[in-house]
Length: 572
Ligand code: WT7
Image (tube, helix red, strand yellow):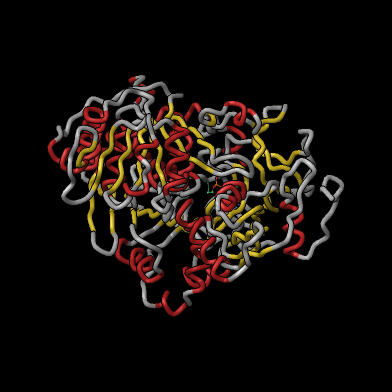
């Protein structure tokens, strides 16, 4: 279905003629935007903040922060100083050397942004952890990464099993009345005392900057490493896709614990010198609309789940607020339903622009640009400098309108550098012909638009968060009542998918409502609230292969009343 072109964006598009740019564009052009193209000194945080603090943007607001209790703003010059101070503290008390892992586990707050930028200035690799993680999830990530320093809050430290983390040497706490010890410090007290000048650690463009843990269908969460060089693409996509212009006020609703919250909640906007809004606290429709009104947000990047929840809150709420500042609205993370696009047209008078990418890709790859004709339901077209294709399982490129693996030709600047401690896993993403295979299935139409069809693997996308069934299953079988567990994503109108667990109980346990609640709490407390199964169904036995693997495909077929397909590998 074709819809007429936009009333969605007004003003000058940073990406004008897509076809022409696509033909002639070369990534090496973008490097000229950065100071390091002249000085040879690379550091992502310098380019994102200091470069502007030393320009006409010095007194421009870089960060607007607000939650239920706080409303603050920081200019580029102030953010430079705060992050310098943070860098000095992390370096001195954390004894940090280039490449050491500094993990940051705290809710969104200005301190979180000082810490991330400061740690990057020290040359450390930053691992941001979503605040909802519980002890098991925190332990896995800190252990795998060998984190040396942790910056967290007094409220969250109880979820860090410090005694089980031999590599962890220094802890900084944010909060009130912090007791300092040899290895534990009051972060903001130290920051307040620190020098506002710092000597930035210059790095190689391919040195690590950010380590994001993400889930696959098998194994533990894996550490996806992104390097300073990714800034090239963060910058360019912030121009082309977010369409950021000098006067824009931009708001990305994602938490920095996920890649959207770093690539487009920190780097994209600040590399382009844009005023960036950060909202702390939980999702509340009224508070969100008020944020747009209060700050006059012009460009807004969120997720289908959030839009669907706003939709669910009703259109009356929208009418209370002045949202006319919005000029460009974007979405990522899951399929953007045409219904949501239609709702966006109605309430914002703007078309929501879908973008497709992944933790591993580091930045946007397939997008709907402000300057192009949008087909609702399509993820759009590859950005200039990116070659996308649909390939079969042998790596052959398929013609238009054939469903297959969505693949990208290796070599875009923000691509992950490796999987931490797991080179083999990294290699497994690629197929002959230098194709990165995404794990998504899709097709491309004759006009070069890509259409998402689903995941090839069993990864679950629930409320825009990626959950590996294996992690949930592993947690479940730790429960004394559970013999076996199989976990699938079940389609849900609001959350995209919900987590459903099929469970076989050990002898002597009865399937009661009480037990269901207990199991849910067990996963919530052991892993994370968003990883707890919303639905639990008990079965005598679960379908398994002869080698003992749970056949999630069969569970899914049961759930959806579909044919179970080839069962030749199933045990009796
Ligand atoms: C998976 C990656 C980096 C963005 C946040 C999610 C799904 C992402 C879309 C879209 C349909 C999408 C894919 C992808 N996904 N964007 N526009 N339409 N599906 O990052 O947690 O690494 O998950 O999210 O399945 O593989 P992530």
